[in-house]
Amino acid sequence: MTKNYDLVVIGGGPAGYAAALYGSAAGLKVAIVEENKIGGTCLHVGCIPAKELLETASVLRSVRQAKDFGIAISQDPVIDLSISQNRKQTIIDQLFAGLNSLLAGRDVTIYSGTGLLGANRKIEIQQNGETEIIQGTNVLLATGSTPRTIQGFEIDGKTVMTSDEFLSIEKTPNRVAVIGGGAIGCEFASLLNDLGSSVTLLESLDEILPGCDKDVSTAVRRSFVKKGIDIQTGVQVEGHEGDAEKTTVSWSDKGQQNQLEVDLVVIAVGRAPNGHAAGLNDTEVVVDEKGFIEVDEKLRTNEKGVWAAGDVVNTPQLAHVGFAEGILVVKEILGESPVSIDPSTVPWCIYCDPEVAFAGLTEESAKAAGYTVAISKHRYSGNGRAMIIGETEGLVKVIAEADESGKAGRILGVHMAGPLVTEQLGQAYLAVNLEATVDEVANHIQAHPTLSELFGETVMSLTGRSLHG
Ligand code: NAI
Image 1 (cartoon, rainbow, N blue to C red):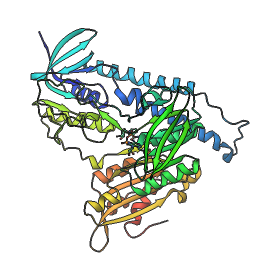
Image 2: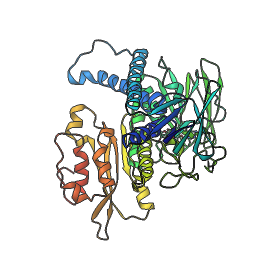
Image 3: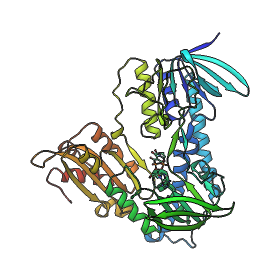
Image 4: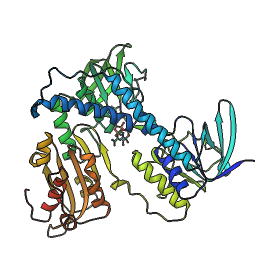
């Protein structure tokens, strides 16, 4: 007899396991099919390991700064990356065990193997030459994404790596070229620079961090350059030639040829969706030419009862967007008519130094959408807590809709670069998504002295009055 579930999830990353946990909490009988490890890219080769290594870099910066606080360190700090790697793995193992026990505790059946969706929401699970068929009244495709690479750069795990391999390095490379100046490229460039590598960041567009507000990307660029990261924008990377020890990367910059010998090339040029990973033969599911599964705003595919969520659909490729999408699908299945997710207002957090966090429209995108805007920017250099922790670089920028008189109203976007901004985004995200006005937010008290009072100060100055602005 074919086993039947209310919901079968194919893919156990953030979108898949969120749907499984939330669905089972809501009383659905759920199965999840995973060919590798529950937790997906985020837990095993993405967010969690990257942030652990970036925390190591942060501790190193603090130790180097200790003398400013009168704490004498008798020698330059020495880093043993293998210890940080072990620590990283312990964190992953703990989270992995926790996730499995949560799923087990909620009676979610986990199938190990590759799940292939066919007609009538039947899923064939293949593992080690054996197959089993299960059926879902509803099916969620959450097959994720894999790192993209570029022509001329074979991933060998020695001199050429993507994030998959890089996050397990045991030794700090001396000279590195990071190709791609997006979220991953900037996090890795920042990490390597802190660890002591000589870093060149090669980006094909005219600025790093595409999608960020210009003031934010400029702040990060300035800070990176000050730290000694060589940023080359508007370049065309052509190829490389070398061996397992070192290689020479070639690129052109407005017609001028450049070459650089490095010990490691890290490719961070985006992630490709695994749209075809679940077979989908004899279904109406449509996969577009980029590999994304086509869905409507409720994440429904073309096949009745089949949904898709996470990196495999064309929405921001962020773990927390995957969580939100998994939850949305469950609510849809339960007939609760949830509000769709607006991709332009999701929170973004990038953990380079300085950190970047934002939600909502940038100044450019707000103007392009036809808004008349009022803008306020405040720098951390005037913030007491920032001075106390010794990290005064960066800014908060608030973009609000303005009326004909220029008076600021609804907050459209908040963009931050600076100390621990990833932990400060919460209230800004709520303000944008609750469509709060600057007057409403300015009425609230910000604790003092905090880093986050800079957000309150920036909003207050849009009311026409301020304390320190
Ligand atoms: P991305 O799309 O954010 O950035 C890729 C960058 O590479 C772009 O700036 C692009 O212009 C550049 N590029 C593309 N081809 C190139 C070439 N041939 N030569 C030079 N530059 C080239 O992708 P990224 O950074 O790889 O991240 C993948 C996904 O993972 C993103 O969608 C991101 O949202 C997500 N992510 C988010 C993080 C966060 O929010 N903290 C951290 C890591 C990843």
